[in-house]
Image (cartoon, rainbow, N blue to C red; front, side, top):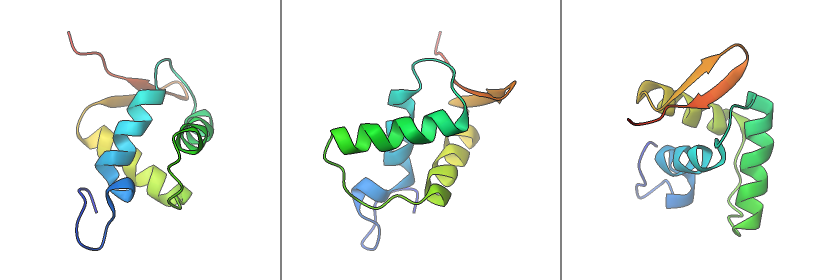
Length: 82
């Protein structure tokens, strides 16, 4: 589920989706904006695997647990490495 397995294709693994979310989080955005941005990014890059909103939220949870994003004042932020 988090990483690709025999039953989870690489384009559906939570780390893959999390990486795609990180690519679009170039500036603070709401969860809704991130969802639309991710769907747009996936369509533009010919990633046609079905992605339900619940899987998107699980990917956000994974990124939050890894400490790579944070949520403040209604916006998602990608943490910067210094």
